[in-house]
Image (cartoon, rainbow, N blue to C red):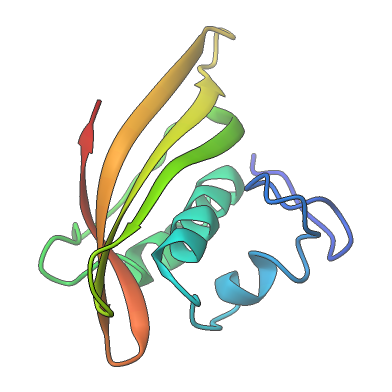
Length: 129
């Protein structure tokens, strides 16, 4: 079962801001200001098991038809590199810590690509590190 967050709760993405001014508005449809903000909101969507948001923010050329999330419990996100390549493309390198159902901890590291089209950022793909 996905956790719930109130507007004044700390945002799961680790920005230090409250959910209501950080990822909350993006999950409700506001456009991300940049690829890093989209990355953070997508992490929050994984925490909240918000499949619809994940699919909506995935670029149509690489988006899967369906997305089933496992029972991973996400613990933290650290964005290590934000690299704007142009006004419409960027890369974000991050490490996300989680635990499986048996409580075994793991770290997922990814170098992700993003593009901006029609005023909105989209996740394209990523390489695991």
